[in-house]
Length: 116
Image 1 (spheres, rainbow, N blue to C red):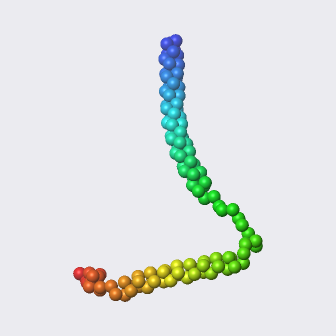
Image 2 (spheres, one colour):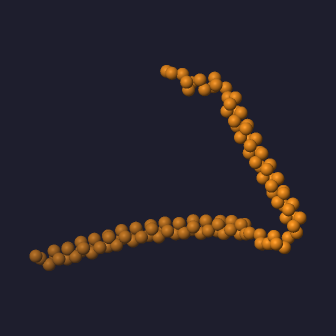
Image 3 (spheres, one colour):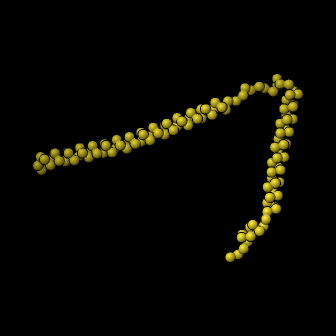
């Protein structure tokens, strides 16, 4: 085998190695850029979450043991009345929806029962 064939083999091997390294470098660069984009999106989402977390701070706990009994009784009666009003509003809405269903015009839906 002549000496230039060894040079040719090594040149092809080195060029193949450089091509492979370039391919992997581009592939790695694209992944790093994508990871950077995702990291910036994550930072933005974390900022939004931290702002919302600040809004969700709980009020200081005050045990009812030290409160006035008549004030607590009034609060409980008011809460019970509020629940009763909300329950009645839901019941009225259900009755209204039911009346709409019962009093629906059957002629509007005649196409459902006709046989073609």
